[in-house]
Image 1: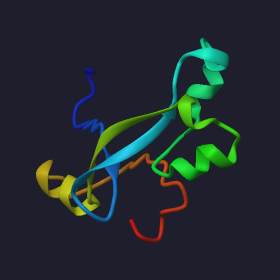
Image 2 (image 1 turned 30 degrees about the horizontal axis):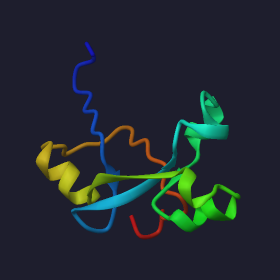
Image 3 (image 1 turned 180 degrees about the horizontal axis):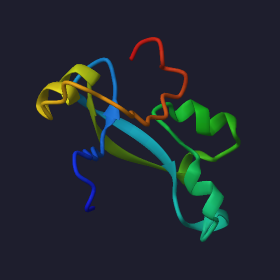
Amino acid sequence: AGVDNAVLIRAAVADQNEMRPFYTIKNEGRWKDNGWARQLASFYKEHLLKLKILEHEIAEEQVQCFTLATILAENQLADLDVLLVDTEGYDGEI
């Protein structure tokens, strides 16, 4: 807030404009109030399962995804100084 020309977008950058399932750890049971567990999230449920997160401990939510071209066009961004994303190894595709 209060920063000129800053555009904050709560969405994932992807190869298509669509909604996708995103997996996180539920804040209950052995993970109740465990702050670091909130950092474990992925578009790939298998990633959490490999980390020994049990199926019933995983929550799914839908996340809006946009291509980088869509984000630039919809926000009329001709110049981009900083883009901060966590691509989970998806850098080449983006």
